[in-house]
Length: 452
Image (cartoon, rainbow, N blue to C red; front, top):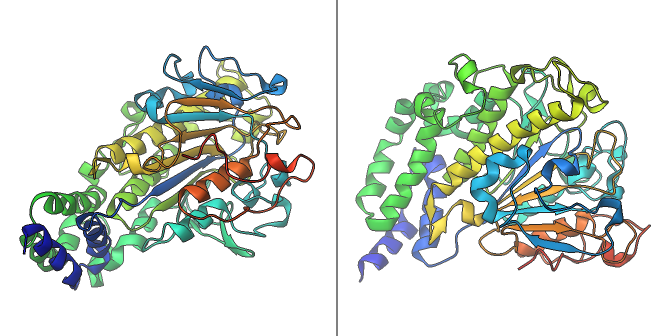
């Protein structure tokens, strides 16, 4: 029997004790790699509140047609710089797609957010009346934790939020609002007993599982041993606040106190911590679908650590301060969001997987819960896509702008969602409701321009 066969046999037969929660997802992935199966696909939705102006994600030197668009624009990003709000994603430009011109009128709802309607294809005025796209993908990309929701809310004391995701009618999905409690909920049980109450002590957790870890490591060699090590590092980086937090670098870090971001009440620290947690959970194999809500769902943040006293509602209504216009303030907020996304992507890209990296098998969807502006038109819903799900999507270095609403060739956000489902093997004929005011070709079927 070959060494490879020995390792595959061991991986199939291994049983775990205290380390089951942490090691089982890792061993499942190692078993898949040893048997030649493809790496798991992972999807992250980063959804910010209060709208996203199309001009803020428009590549430099490429004209946006907007209401004049009468045909599809499909251009390469290779010779165009990213706009300032997306500058942090420049290292990933060849894996980036910017999509303009999609409508989502089916989601029109109350207040300043259609809430569940943004990730679902239905009106947001009635609450969670159907499955949202992240839940649909999670059902296909199964994990120990099927779907993980992480939220930034204006109140740091809020523990859980329900706002944009639902598994089915009347069943909203919870979002962890406090990074420290989210960590304890996800990983505390692995330590057991009193150790579960001390979520940041790496030694307690790893010592508790040491027998399992030593036994597994002793019977692996080469790539399998290296792969197991990377999973353990994902946990250690989250458990060790000195090393785990070292990768969380934002523009304002030099001006902030040297605090543990997982326990911080500052809005910038909390969002950075949630993105760091998302990366660790994905790398550990506990889940394959994460939704990060950055004040989505009709929530108005005061970005005091970015030097703003006005809440996003006032800024969205045209308010400026400190010599900066409303648009300039919105750009500052967007820059920070994108820097958080870039840090997450960098961490996924640093971990080898198969012939590439974890990022190569991941898709990050960056969008707003409310289309093109604070009070949206619903006929423009900008989306930024990073990654191609291991080659299942044609989203590398492209700019796509679809014809305007009502014109032949126009497409909806629902068709993009439908494309993601097909990319992961869910071949359903439709997703959610459709916009009956326009031609069915605009609302049915996956996007051939996106789907590989």
